[in-house]
Length: 250
Image (tube, rainbow, N blue to C red; front, side):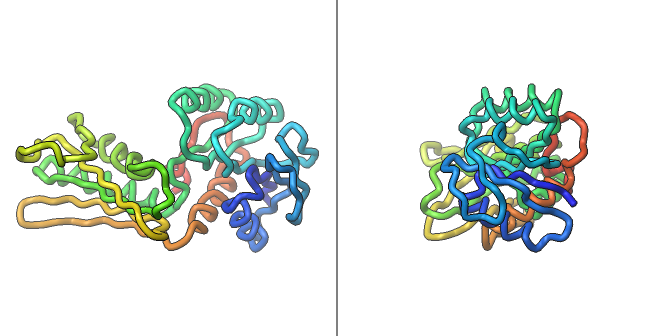
């Protein structure tokens, strides 16, 4: 039985994960953390990790990048593995996470969906074969109208995954409206669509001479990110210091 502390337990994803774990015989949430300190769950809720009295095997953070420094310090003090699901970390915060991972187990991914991380592996295989044969690649991502950032962190992570297997450096291009020229060879196009209530869609297009290959992932609910976080928590519990990602999980 994996004992979990849920940080951000009163938020949307915190409630989703609470429901998922309630039906999981291999895991249990023993405590929650929320800045409001409000109860309403089947477990005690605290305002910070230092106040938690229950023992746990891992913490899932689906809150925000705020108070990261305090969270890392409190987790280090009790040697508690962290699954960091929040997005929007600054470059400085990412360096802080990397430094902390030298002494404690931390798992961080741009997207917690198992499906997206499998797609990441698929496109690496495709890119390693196709792009040396002259194929172009574009990524088109779609999200709901309320999403503030563009392109999505997942789209950038997919582009990074492609770049990892290429021998040459490729440029990321987000807008071609000001150019009047043929497409350069070393280019990965990334486009964003915002509208309606689209949960999340990422399509990777490999276009060659007389043939096109499309690999696509569609999220129909945010529950898939919660499921991935729980799987990641089970994976991370008991691991040694290091910075892990969902690639390690899948």
